[in-house]
Length: 139
Length: 162
Image (cartoon, each protein chain N blue to C red):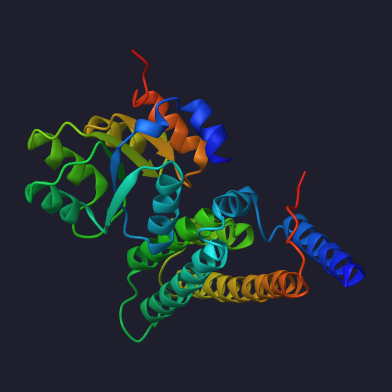
């Protein structure tokens, strides 16, 4: 998709100053997710596991959106999501994982997710997350 | 020069289509190509390099875990396969991913254990090793064709898979 086509889908893209945090232990996925976000003009940072995500928030940083992987060492996506919600963090959290059976999905959602997408992520799946989370709602 | 470019472009198109038809690549590879642009002209090959590094690392981990001189930790093997499955799925490496799916089922199978399970896992691992190396060679050939087209002054064509 060209930037013009994307801008048609998301009318406020030009003014958007959205920020996102990629939480994933795979370099392959980190690279792809960051590129997807860059393509949509979303500033982003990356951490390699749930604990680093929590630490980043503890250090005072904040993001509009978190793309949270499920399986990670030290602290996984479910634990990190629960911890962030306990801390009162209200950022939108989208769970992004290959684990998609109903039980695992439910457990992840119940940890405090706002949305869930099956990996691998594509431009249209990311757009669907943004739509679902009302990031570009026109008032 | 134009005739050369046209010939190279045809070769590239045919080769790329054959990779999809033979099941080496799937739609996710197409998605990666969409993300490649003037700002990041080597995006696809960079991501694939990371994937091949993953293959080397994870296969080596699994080979170590399956070394029967100690106790085999099949859950460790399963965890590595899960990671490789994720990586291969993310780059569109279809055959590698399919092998990882069967490999995972192998690790989780309740009807085998001990040495028999170990043997089956080692066989799976050997297949994964062969398959990722085959893909690496194929993609190297594809990237070389791209380079030749550019060096001849042409543009790499968009290949429509359907």
